[in-house]
Image (cartoon, rainbow, N blue to C red):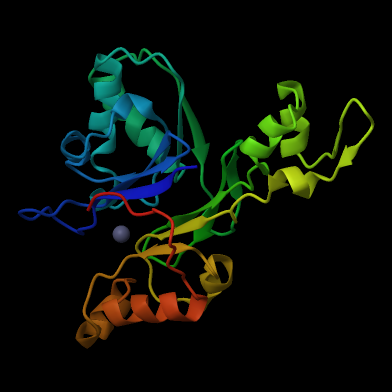
Length: 274
Ligand SMILES: [Zn+2]
């Protein structure tokens, strides 16, 4: 199953040449999830061949412009391109007011529905569960309310030994039960144990997205052991005072957090084009 992240932008504050404000897209089993949407995100999607129409879930960490000023433009483009599917949008409660105001004064009535789910910056909460993934908020420590997002892949069904099943002429209608762990009994009454015919699926992967925050041990436990950690770092460690004043992390601290929480690397494809 695909579980891949593509960084569309990782810059902060104002856009600079060749670097874009924060946004990334996750491809989880061919479903696209957009995380943050800084200015220029639509251009980056074109550049990286990400079809915006395939995005059904958008997560916004907080309301500093470098993390969401591209959102209204994207929502507007989806409308102009004839989207009809409901879009799930997760973010701080005030985000809905901002969007409503924008569309109110442009007299735009969106052709599709936005299902808005407000995030709570004070507690880790599971905000989405589907057949592929569950998503939790990560309460962060920034100047304004801010959450990260933790994506956990669901455990997949067991994998079939196809050649063996063909050799034994196991009827296709038994495959689903086998994937779920059942044994197989043939017409002569011979029992085949499940592990003779299937193997366990790969371990589920996880991806932790930690947006703007200062170094704060309170969220470390939650992101412990993530297969991949994306953690913002806005200043070099020589500017630690400035980082603390503005509630950001230094590059050294981000590396320490990866170390402390045991962020892994993975031998399976994970990171998309940079
Ligand atoms: Zn911020």
